[in-house]
Length: 113
Length: 111
Image (tube, rainbow over all chains, first blue to last red; front, side):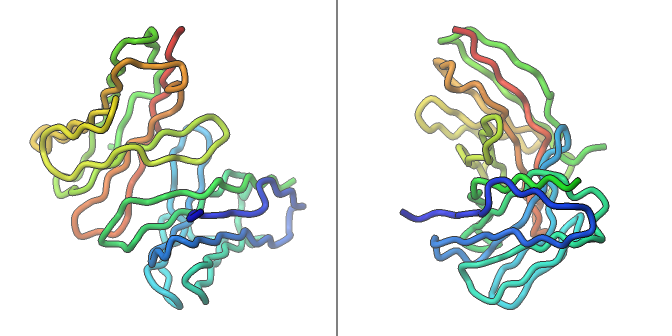
């Protein structure tokens, strides 16, 4: 079965700790994305990558970091610098930036207290 | 002005009726338009995309695009209670890599 996996589904952390969210896809897609969803605000783009070893900041990259060492994997680190990290985090992929239909993983709900 | 606007709803329709969901966008250069369905607590699921003016049908779903008026709509025929969800409109602007999402319209199909 092809798809996108995100783990864990729920994550709890104490304030001041960095946390890494996993995203893996076996769709052979070149482009991958990270979004954050808060109630009433829609999806906001954090980072995106169109190719291995390359990634670009989205609209709300401050306090986040990513890596793209393998085509299949695009982990997101939420650092202690992110002021409001509690949110629903969604990873998506598309064949490429020129083919923009995006398919989403199941999401990780992060709670920081 | 928001780049992609949707009425938050809820939009309530009886089972079997046609549900009409609307979305307007601000960038005239937008080229690609998407509708996602999101059940409560779940991730968005792509259900339709449209690139050209006019209608595109897929089963009970029809996407309608009018670039001159800068709106895109989604019609759901023979609405079922299982269609109850939030529907997100998304737009990709020409020459720009980002897809912008609306905040979604909540649809309730009443049995």
